[in-house]
Image (cartoon, rainbow, N blue to C red; front, side):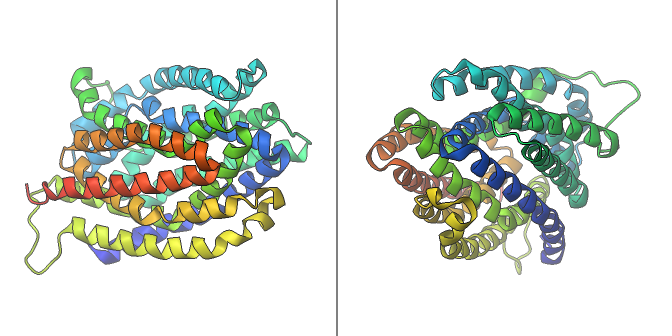
Length: 413
């Protein structure tokens, strides 16, 4: 694992991520201010459910595409390309189910059905399709193209929200409309200019669907359980405390997501290299550290430094969003402590996926998510949004340790 190459790719990704941060924060601030705590809480609940369900729409093909290209499996890459039309159908089914669940969580208000469907175009439909192209580019270490896809999606999403705000929109329906238009434009841009070459043939290959989805399913299930675990605090807060609590938690969590971009850039640069090494003979020179241990060390250093920065900067959150969001400051600080554990779980989990043990990763994440239901329910009832943040950080630490222990079994096999 060349540190120079890793640094170069992380820098490329980070450059794009800076733009994503700008777009994301701008959209986040407009939505939080225009909708207010309660409506922003309802919006955050809808997005939380859709984000949790997204992996099922993706069918795991994004991560499988990354691994196929990284390990030079051209036959599997062609098969993935042949079944991408399925993503439109699968994402439509997932969107319908997510809207039903969202309506239950926001009080069954049928006026939110259309906004939910519109928001889903941006958070489920478009990501499911463009995620495959992004996976192909990442597997080929073409971080510029992969990052451009992310920037296009973030930029058009922010533009859609900005246009609605400028013309005076201030409801979930109006902002949902802007997000739906941005999703359509994102798909058009990616399909026109950012399709990964070399995976298309004149005639589509005969695909053994059973074999392909047997490979992709563990990736989809792992992402699905991870997304559900990540969004579980918001969902349980909606059930136990109400939309205002969701809005406060979402404010802290969204700010953390924007701040964590440098860490994500590093981890994205690490993943295809781990997959490539895991798919080879896995012999490490005696003078070099194992790539997994190197990756864990780099991830721990970067995430710890970032956590320290967030702890200090959290006090400025009310100045950005307004005084009604001041209770989100301690929530953000508790969530910041989860970053080193997130990095460890991510790197060790990617190693398991690279060596063909994605099922182990899925089971560990599933058990943590299941444990999270009673833990976060009690924490939310006892201490509201702060309790949910504390519970989430504790569970992330548990998952990280368990995944790291499991990955040790497959260092040299």
